[in-house]
Image: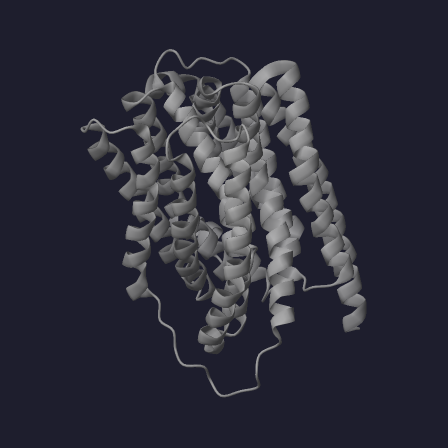
Length: 417
C-alpha cells in the first residue's frame, strides 16, 4: 500500500518535483495565513486590508518591472546548464530598463491617484520592496533552472518566516504599521543572502555561441504575458475592492481568502515546475488531468467545509461571511485547472505568431476584461462580486488555452512527420 502511494505521488521526475514542491508550498501557505492572523490580531482589520492591498500592488507591479526576464533565465538554464553565466549576464542587463521605467511610472501613478493610501512613506516602502524582490527572484529563478525546485521554495519559506519574526518583534514596540511594510523588504534580503551559497555557477562551456538577445527577449516577453495572465487574477480583485469599498472590507475578504487560497497552492506550483519540465518533455494531458481532479475536488470540498469554522476562530468573531467562501473556493479550484493547461501550453511551445496571439489574448482577458468585470460585479453586489468575476474570467481562459494546446500539437505533429 505504501509503495502504491509512493508510485502515485513520486512516479516520474515531474510528478516528484511537483509533490515535493507542493509540500514545501504547504508550509509557505501556512506561513502566509500566520502573517495575516498576526496582523489582524496585533494591528486590526483595517491594517490587514492595508497589508493585502500593499502585497497585491507590489506583486502586480513586479510582473511589469521584471518583464518575464527571470522566467526566461530559468528556461534557458534548464536547457543550457553549461551557459548559466552567459544567460545570467544577459538577464541582468535586460532587466534594468523595464525595472527603472515601470518602477518610476508606477510610483508616479500610485502617488498621484487614489491607489496611494494616506500612509506616510508608503511609496518608499513600495519602491524598496520591488528592488529587494527583484534580487530575491533572480536567485529563485537560477535555482529553478538548475531543477532545485524544492530548495528554491525553501528560501521562499525562509522569507515568510523572517516576516513572521519581524512582525512579532515590531508588535512589541510603539512603531507605526508602515514599519511592518518595510520589514517585508528586510525579510527578502535575509532570504536572498541565505540562498547565495546554494547557487553554483560554472564557467561557460566552449561551444557554439547561444542565440541573439532578440530571441531571449522574445521568450521573456511571452513569459511576461503569461505571468500577468495568471497572477493578475490574484491581485486585481484586492486592488479593486480597496478602490471601490474600503480597507476593512478588504481585510474580511483577505481573511477568507487566506484559507481558501490553500487550494491555489498547486496553481502556483504548476508554473514553477511544469513550465520548465514541459520545455523538455511532453505531457499525457487526459491521464494527468484526471489524476489532478481526483485530488483537487475532495481537497476543495474539505477546505470549503473548514473555512466557516477556521476564519472566525483564527481571526475573530467579527469575520463572518455566508456565501463568500463558496465562491472563493470555486474560483480557486478553477484557477488550478487553468494553471495546469496554461503551464503545458507555455512549456511545450516556442515563440511563433500563433503562440504569441494566444498568450496575448489571454493577457488581455486577465488584465482588462477581468478588471472591468471586477469593477462591475463589486459595484453591483459588493466584495462577493470579485471571485464571481474571477471565476467567469478563468473559464474563458481555460477554453482559450485548451484550444491553443490542441492547435499547436496538431501543427507540431505535422511538422515532425
